[in-house]
Length: 335
Image: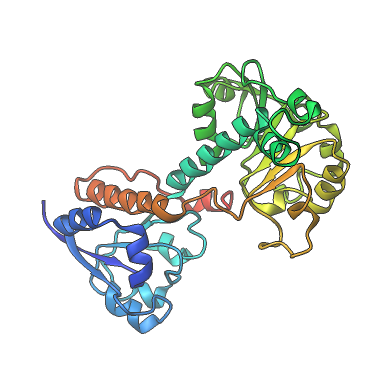
């Protein structure tokens, strides 16, 4: 297998958070790896020097936009592997014009998001957070009302909004439970949803019928505040809404008003704006669990992105199709 030059447009700190020593050594076996070291990826001169003569390139958070000025130093560049989620910060029209394949690690990130969502679904159904607070406040037996809100997953009705990368993985995880899954995704047909183990419904039906609702829609103009005051009002008493997608998907003021009544519960990992204001009521409401945007790749989870990049480079050298190539047509529909 012939070696190629692989440029890694990450600074030293980012490189260490994405690549384990083992994966880096495997990458070096595949190609002549050049990375920025102490250089700044946003410095065009640094990135041009790193990229020059490369056949493949790895980018991630903080990498430069792949403009004509940058790409001109690598006329033989055929592959850009984005070891992060959305390619929008790095892609330009020039990438597609030159026929360069660009891939995204979004499916890798989706695994962690889906696992987090599943954990929140289970702990919400079992009312774990409220039980823990009740023990702290009133002792082991706790408040009978808290115990009355404890349920099992068996026959629970779970709603999943959007079958993107995270949503699809969550559907796979939910197939291990005896639950009924309703899915809202306007891009799918009923047969598609059935193949994913779910029943396709409209959004209002999902909001009205589900015990737990997990949001996975991208942040697009058409999804902004798709969960509004009206749709929140449709939720069952004591139902739970979980947002590990993007803060703008929910009308936050409407959520504050609905949650303040105590009628519904929420688990919120993302806000709009982010971080939330210090006096945001969601941070203090007893029926709301807030986490600081931890659903995606954090800490050791980022190493999966480095492994993904390694796999994409290997497949490229073997003449195989990329795992997750993104077309120019797809770009408009992605977050």
